[in-house]
Length: 286
Length: 133
Image (cartoon, rainbow over all chains, first blue to last red; front, side, top):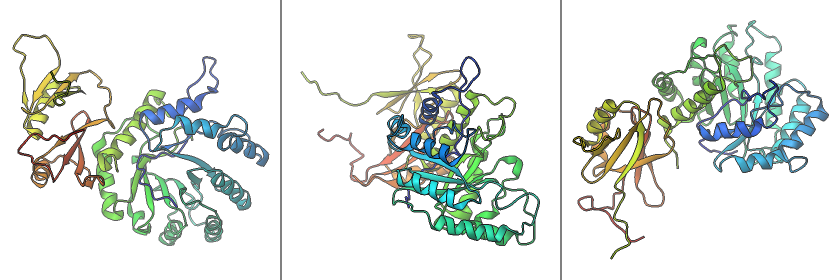
């Protein structure tokens, strides 16, 4: 696995600019790359413009081919050429119960040279409804799935756990949390918006060698936070987990309908805040 | 005749509050304001340390400089870090450049302009530093 200290991370989806007729901009990928380069982020995505499209296996295969091979328009080569040299290119896959399909797609992408594979497990392990009888089995099967991925030396895997802090108040919550953070990925990405209380106690369960991406910049709010409050949370996280930390927005900007007041300009400022906070803590690492 | 540039005289960076910037650079780096004495109508804030200057162009909404930055060599690394810490200014962790073992860390001014602090232990800081290019 890669060990790069890329600190300015993000969950993935971005609000795309609209064409004059209100439809999605067909070249939103270029806009997404420029936005991330200007911030500048350490982790780049294509803004996930296809996230609401069809998802049959054949469609996914075709989409992956567009993104990560020289076939078709060769999006991967285009992304590589547009993104700066330090950028890690990230793609998110939904982690679901058809694990053979997830494994095949993940291994295909990693085999094609994807830098950073993020598996989306939001709401998968700590449902708000409390105890989940199938949870232990799901965790074990997911562990087997993750163990079976063929991850090249220079690639990274991460698990996105959604916005963290509510739900799952069942008796064995600590044991479940321990099992989640024992899953074999390099990074855990968690949304920690202020509304969720920013409880950092989960960090006690994260093995020392794993990176934790703290989703502190609230993508679900039209307010722009001051850096000092964010720096204080990262300092507190550092007391519990040392230096293996990164920072990101709390979720993808286009994961849910944008809140009132969220604009492309504000999305840009929030990404810039991610980058600024990362550099206030870690500088530009050598 | 010489075609050799002598040194960098100043860098010019954005700021949003001239008085705040003036106070911060005076407190952190011991720089002083260079008044233009009515001989210029420039809005640019001129600050000098004697051996180097920094100019600040005021903006209502300053463009972001970071991650671009400038670096200030300090004579006494431990002493300067103690000074920064005593002012309550946040700094990044210290790293060492592998090519020359110089030490670096970063601080940010009130406009979030990134300022690198650096120290080359093998320099004679009592004299201007120069090596052949």
